[in-house]
Image 1 (cartoon, one colour):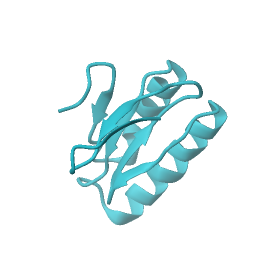
Image 2 (cartoon, one colour):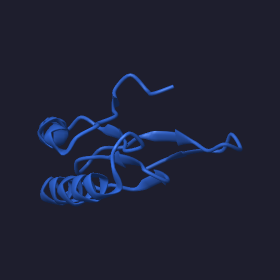
Image 3 (cartoon, helix red, strand yellow):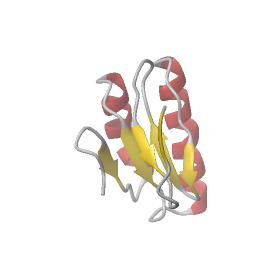
Image 4 (cartoon, rainbow, N blue to C red):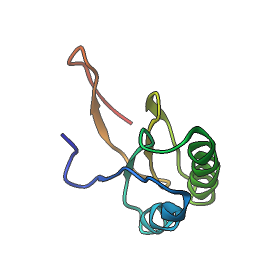
Length: 89
């Protein structure tokens, strides 16, 4: 389940990159699921999103294969691993 302050996006085309960038600019964390994209478009979107996060002094850690948490600078998020261990980053 996604925390209420995190937007979950599952893009299917590169055209949806703007929506991700808009959320980063608005300082809204994005859980980005790339499982529905082709490998080539997923790579392009990761490059764009990483650049957006960098420009906003943020981060883009990989949660698992094709799933990323995109944050602007200064944001913290609480996460729980599969083993139930919680951490705040």
